[in-house]
Length: 176
Image (cartoon, rainbow, N blue to C red; front, side, top):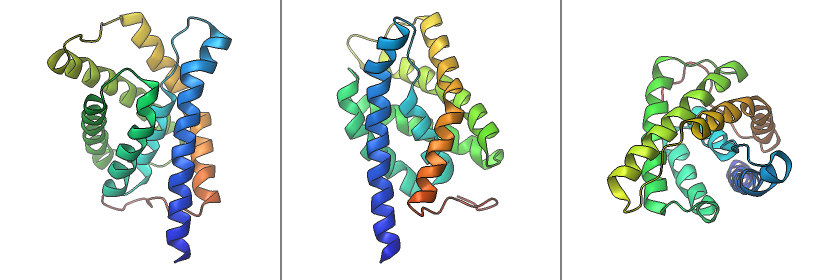
């Protein structure tokens, strides 16, 4: 029973962190850095969930988190969910072949998930939406760079979150 309580607390902390990171990304970043593209801070949280949770738990948490992230974007919920599902599949595929726990891997994976998310979103936007997203190379490039640069401090925060809430992360060598 205590483990269920810790899992609920961890989910609550994930949601609060997702809201906090989205708020920092959409408002606070521009107050400090002006027109520089903001990093996708919430995407690092999604990456952490994909890498350090069991697949079913990760996808359910990511979909639940997307409901809370929806007000911070103009993206339709269906496109957001489909984008996250495709990114989940891509990252899980890579994780099964190459994975080691730690901040270096998280940094490299952050670059990969940022690029994958942008490609998936751009393709889905072209395919589904009436008014598709525009492709701005420099804007997307700097989003990827800044997302990667913020990944290591966020990895420390996410690891601390799991330690404080007694959340068991996937040990090395566990097949997911």
